[in-house]
Image 1 (tube, rainbow, N blue to C red):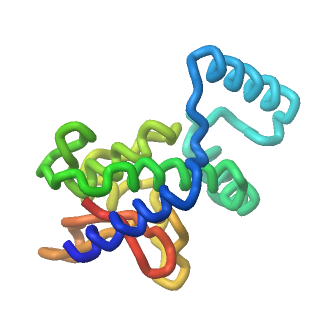
Image 2: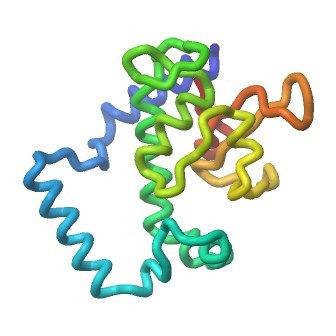
Length: 174
């Protein structure tokens, strides 16, 4: 509970100091931005060597490409997801919850934050995410902002709780 209160206070202070990096716009400006993005992708086919809904072999090639994993694209996805998480600070914990108007459980919060922005959708529960075949285990000293954290309370094989690493030893959870 202290972690949540501290994160909420930090986030509120952060919002006061800094303008949001997410650009809000009307439908026309969003359409224009999408069209511009499509034109950029056509001009630079090397940005996406294969469709994002490709076979596992192509996903593996993307995972092995460190340039892709360290790209601005991945950084932007992470920051958007963390922004979505931070917007939910102070919402009630609701077992099975996945909606901002009702509340979240731990995996529902992560599901909400990431699934609108990822091409490959995450499973719904903490344990399913823990066993997700496309996931990669990361050592504690290699954690990066946006990495998923899993907690084993009852068994080493089952993830009972989860959160998202924010950096500097902090994480966000429901």
